[in-house]
Every structure is written in structure tokens, then in C-alpha cells.
Image 1 (cartoon, rainbow, N blue to C red):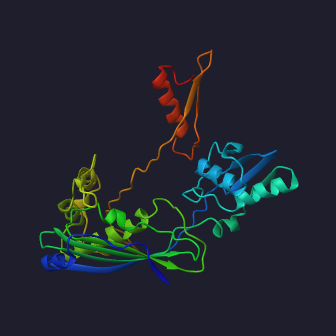
Image 2: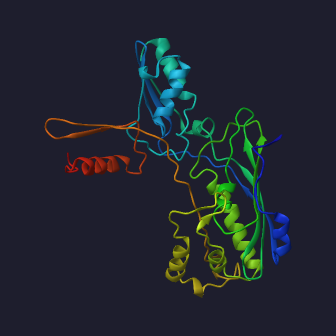
Length: 339
């Protein structure tokens, strides 16, 4: 059954936008679910020492894992330590603490010995989330000069019978282009399936496909170059918040890319370029993703020999966190990075 996630986010008046439009596009996009399946599967080692629990887990969120385990076993959070120096790929699936982690800890406490639990490749498809399947309907209108007059972006996304997972597909739609009349909505469809979860730009990845495909298709209806169409509707303000972007180089990126990739030499008609039995062509799309952050803390100490130790509840999933921590510490204390 369908469960409206929240009232639609509306600015302006869509009917005004429809009246002002020379061309109106209505299109639907079906984005299939995807599984993460990183090279390193989910794996956990749990060790008890009295009422103290130490867990070595392949996790993208060690502190959240620590909080869940403390709550599950009704012990003080100070009694729980979660260790994860590196992550061998996660793509979002290791951002949640799934059931195998407390199960390993429960088994370790029951038998009084450390327990190691490593999931098989087959099990990676069934118990650790996936990108939600979405069906997205986009209505988009523009004047003859390419100025957008309306965008309506309606999403239906699957969730489980137990949880309410929302792919925030409309977030990019509300901020990417200049348009006075915009409506975004999300409807959750409960099905008998495991809950979806974070996966590589959750919301933006799926929503961006629908938005950018619609931009291309409306540009074709206007007989307008897709890059010129995007440049025409570029903006320095987030329409959903009315705040100016602190930085935005989308226009410069499009212009430079057009120069470097020989965009002017392309044939605009889809399917017009081929080599033997293969079709090929040039494409363009924009994307954005929020810089989310939360309060955090770290502890730094200096030993008598000048070595600096940095401690924080983090890990390195391949983005170079340990290098960055080292650089910050070296700059803060004015010491070589080697120390």
C-alpha cells in the first residue's frame, strides 16, 4: 500500500508555469534497485571481558554501532568498544549496523569465547539493504527561449513492511536549476522485502537520473542544445532555501567541458552516430550532493619524544582520513607529518 512520506514541497504555482510554457514534457523513469556487494563482505569479531564488549567490525559508523550494542545488551556505552581501522568497501551498506553484529556478540557471550562471523557472498544480497526501487514521474515546462517555467517531480519508492526508508529524490530537483514553480513529492510503497538503505549518493543518484534525463528530453523538444539549456537555467541561489550557494562552478564546468570534448562537432539527433552495429554519442548531466556533517570530537596528545597521537571514533574507507588527520595534527602543532 502507498504511504505519503510527507506533504509535497511546493513553491510557486504549477498552473502558472504550465500556462507560461511553450513546451511541456511529461515522462516516467523506472530506476531498479541495486545491491552494494563490496569486495570485503560484512565481517565481525566479538570479544567479552566480563561486562565489557569489544567488537571488530567492518563498519562505516563505529559510534552508531557502539550505541546500538550498548542498548541491545543493556550495558553502559563506556563498556563497548568498536574497532574498525579500515573498510574494504561499503558503498553505504556498512553505514547501518545489521543483525549479524549483535548476533556475533550474543553468541560470544553465550559460549564465553570470542566469535568471528563472516558473511558469505550469497548472503550479501539478502540482509544488508539495497538502493530502493523508484518510479519517478516528471513534468517539466519551458518557454521558447529555454527558461524553465515549472518542474513537478513525483516519486514512488519501495520500503519494507517494518521501516520507512525514503530516497530523497527531489532534493536535487529543488535546488539545481532556476525555476519559480516547483513541486516535489515522495510516496512510500510498503512491500514484503528487506528495508532499503544508503547506497552511493542516496536520493541524488536516483533523482538525478530522472531530473537530468527530463532536462535532455525537454531540450530536444525545444530544439535547443542540452548544454545551452542548462546554462540558460543556471542559478546562484538554492531555490528551496532562498540562500546563495557559497560556491558553484556548474556554469564554468559546462563551458570548459564543452570545449574539451568537442561538443560543437556532435550531431544532436539521437541515434545518428554509429560504428558498425554500435551506436555512440555525446551526453551531459549535472549532479550535486550535500556536505552533511555532525558535531564530532578528537583527542590529541604529545609524547616526550615529540610524537603526536590523534584519537577519534573514525575509520578510513578509502577517502584518506588518516592522511588528513595527520596533516591537521602536523599543521596544528607545527611538527613534521612523520611525527
